[in-house]
Image (cartoon, rainbow, N blue to C red; front, side):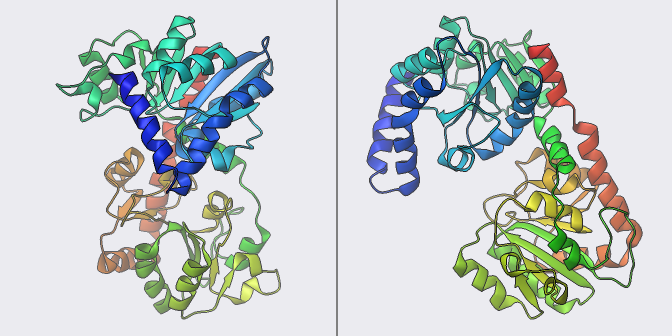
Amino acid sequence: MYSFAMYVFAVCAYIAALFNKKVRKLVKGHFHTFNILKAKIGPNDKVVWFHAASLGEFEQGRPLMERLRRTHPEYKILLSFFSPSGYEVRKDYEGADCVCYMPFDTWDNARVFVKYSHPEMAIFIKYEFWENYFRHLRKKNIPVYSVSSIFRPSQYFFRWYGTAHTLRYVSHFYVQNEESKRLLANVGIKDNVTVAGDTRFDRVLDIRRQAKDLPLVEKFVQGGQSPKTGESNQSIPYVLVAGSSWQPDEDLIIPYFNAHPELKLVIAPHVISESHLQEIEGKLKRPFLRYTDATKENVGDVDCLIVNCFGLLSSIYRYGQIAYVGGGFGVGIHNVPEAAVYGVPVIIGPNNKKFREAQALLKLGGCIEITDAQSYNTTMNRLLTDKAFLQESGKLAGDYIAKNAGCADIVFKDIFG
């Protein structure tokens, strides 16, 4: 029944590709997968296969891939994605020898994929559990590891009508928390489970260590709290870095910014289309500049810097004293640890219940939830006027990230020795 459902799903995707650009990219990418494998992987290559659904899971697997590249150069790294949002962004990732889509989990696709890739082991990140691929890997005696996996009672595996059959093909689970271990134990999976945590913490620490120096942003903040010296001058405006913002987030952030000259703003919208950028600019009543138009001569003359390019946000967070992570009034919050790692308090919207790190930081006090303009204004007023509260909230955020790192080292040592 599972295989039949996968064939039906594949047919539906082919039909949807006629009308949907994203699905069309996925289907087209599947057609090239086996040719990519044949071109990039030789019959005598030693291969480790990493699979991620999308970009978020890739970031969780990245610390392991980078450790493997540094310490075991004899292995070729195969990286596969299911979603175009992962593959299209990371298809040229230099840390892997071969990057491709993982075709739909049909019996034939799984058989051919495993045949051409012939991995010595397969590492699936977080939620990825594919029965036919797992069965073929087991048939070839290839170990399967599930890393940073997290389980909830509502998942199909643990419902009265579900089955944990697919999970039994996994050689070892490295789960994020004790609840996941307990749920697996309830379905008879006990001896091959380790509570290791989440590699995402290791990734954001790696990002912090590799953060780019951004002279334009340094010039923009104009001697506020320096990320290099930690010194601050209360006569210099505070800097709020708003990352991955959407229109509902901006409707809170910008009016407050307009009314508070003691605050500077760096805003990195999630969507950087021309229409959205113009929408943001239309709401601003203080001098602003797009990052791509900034120079050392003009960037110090504005109060708001609009980041209209990708790849800078994770480094920009360190230039602020307060961070706002967007998405909490719609699709769900974005990457909270990416901001918290710099030891700054993080403001988020209410759609955060499914995000473990955000929930933990809310309980600790390193993260602050706002639900409307009034709660946002109240939060910002306190952060800007209560220096002890600002510093303590930031410290709690940074300490939480540091204390929860180490998963990548645990998993890597266990698998690769």
